[in-house]
Amino acid sequence: MESLLNSWTFLNAAIGPLAPFVIVGTLGIYMMLLALPVVLKKEEDPFSKLRTGGVRLSSGKDVGGPAQIKLRYDSGSAVSLDKIAKYLEPEDEKELSESRLKLIQAGYRSKTAVRTFNFAKLVMGLGFLFIGLLYILIQPGELKMMSVILAIVIPGGIGYFLPIYWVERRRQQRQEDVTNGFPDALDLMLVCVEAGQSLDQAILRVATEIKHSYPTLSEEFEIVSNEMRAGKDRVSVLRDMSERCGVTDVSSFVTVLVQSAKFGTSIADALRVYASEMRDKRVLRAEEKANVLPTKLTIGTMMFTVPPLLIILVGPSIYDIYVNLLS
Image 1 (spheres, rainbow, N blue to C red):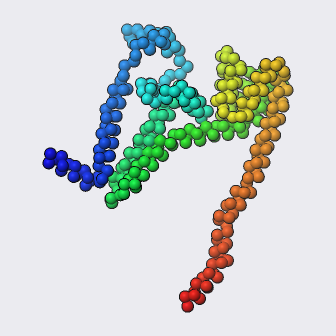
Image 2 (image 1 turned 90 degrees about the horizontal axis):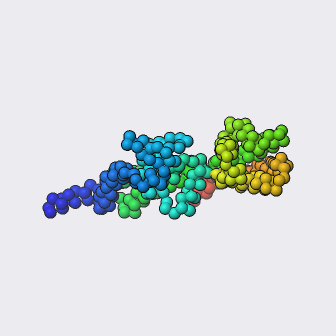
Image 3 (image 1 turned 135 degrees about the vertical axis):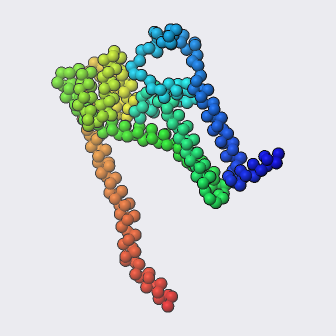
């Protein structure tokens, strides 16, 4: 009993009043590290083979079923995350679909994108939390309870929300790239269609031509072209493209093409009208940015020019008044 009291006194002297929290947190992390190998080495459910239709031979090789038909090989990290997928993916189907759509719009189209995203949030949150804890431990003086809590919680929150900010920023950047390059892509598509090419050939040619100037939009058109050549319905392919891009202009373009195919009107006429509208819309966006520029320059001028000017003009008078009052 006396040894326990001496140990507790030593921990209080070394760590401070947060010794219980530090001990509980350390034990929790230790238990998580102990349980992680058990979770990763969890054996595969035998009934999953029946659901996928695959058969495992005595040599350990799978034959038949969808598991053998792969367009690309999975990495080792993805296989490891598959074993803890139920902890990294939301159970609600709607929430899972929304997360997957947001990641697709940000350019992450892999099957394990949602798991990797949630794993990154967990790891970075715990990592920044541990960094805050180390910062508290190396401080020479004794800090207040509120300062300690803020020094630990704020880095953890930053680490948790950093992947969310990164994905949202990348998503906005891709949408901006698609919006900027879409009018030029429509003009090229109109030229190809009027030259006698079909819509599928025009999309493929546009994807090739704008590959260096607008790589994001070129990638989307390449996906559309590949899906059409694979035999997928054109309407569903175009609607999938509008969901992946998340841009209003692309959604309107898809609606125009679907209505043109439904009512049997000329695709060239529809593209000509819509391309003209996109060019006008791009000019309006440029004018809007130009009109906002004087306001931004005024704010900068007020912040960086007026204070030095006031110091130069009014400063000597204030100094003279101060000297006269003292004398």
